[in-house]
Image 1 (cartoon, rainbow, N blue to C red):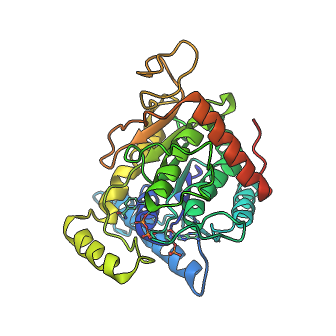
Image 2: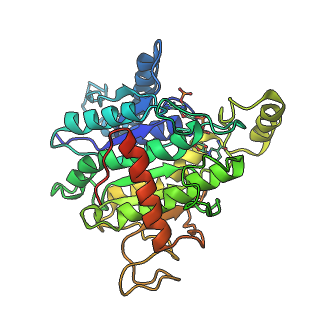
Image 3: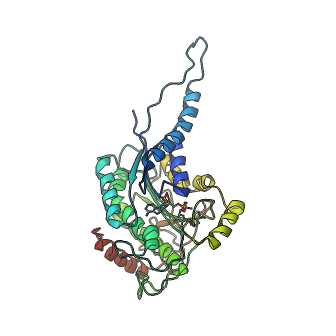
Length: 353
Ligand SMILES: NC(=O)c1ccc[n+]([C@@H]2O[C@H](COP(=O)([O-])OP(=O)(O)OC[C@H]3O[C@@H](n4cnc5c(N)ncnc54)[C@H](OP(=O)(O)O)[C@@H]3O)[C@@H](O)[C@H]2O)c1
């Protein structure tokens, strides 16, 4: 019996993450859904995922059970349940993120992980609001916790990228669904690296997007990660519960707009899972070519990215390739790495250079 591919989806309890996890389950993936726990959450998430898997199993079984002449048992062959998991984790608390990720790596044993998708988020108009770790809440969901998950799950992703079983021929995928290609650089990354003094909604959005580009690019250009694909995606405008934390005078118009011009979560998920499905069927490692204009490696054109074979891939809402910001420089990458190292280090997550 072959082992299913495994995807960790953070923020799988609602919105885009929930739709992505269903899409992957339908494609035969075992989903490790990560999200806030609570009364009945585990059962709710697992029965939802089993339903998603059953949709594809039913189709596969029906196709496999086309009756031949003389066959008097038309019932489809039974297919074993895929064994999805729900792991409770409050991503505001980086020590919970560390524990959750380390537990997954430990429990996967030699198995590895084929995809990590991070969608945890919130939309607020509040100013810097500290978490238990003293970091801002929104930045924690959109960047610090995502950097922590990506870094802590690397051992399991590397295991998969070096696997000889060819389960993911294009290599595993780490994807942050946030704002790839649609944010600007956060210019105060040196003087106010954690946004403690210049907090605005725009700066918070730019910081999270900009740091994501630079951090994932830094991970991508580190040799042990060369078999892993790093993606920063923008979902576009999607009809989810996004903005629940906003005051009602802002939330009302958002809901009306979402209804009329927003994509459905399922349509969005269809685009977001594209790189994962491509890497699951391609025979080329590094199928996802990095976005142009990046920092580049030696012998590489830093403006066009030509000749570069490792780096973050920016994905637009329709699955096409997007662009890095003009502020994407080697200096910024090192500064953001150091800042991330400081912040995660305060919560016991040690980044190694
Ligand atoms: N929807 C859009 O139009 C849009 C546009 C641009 C960017 N985005 C970005 O895309 C991402 C996903 O958006 P969405 O529309 O799916 O948002 P959503 O419907 O609000 O879902 C957010 C998800 O994050 C989870 N979450 C929130 N706080 C958490 C915490 N402390 N720990 C763990 N999980 C937590 C939520 O869990 P619960 O179920 O427990 O609440 C939920 O599963 C967000 O980063 C958002 O900023 C969305």
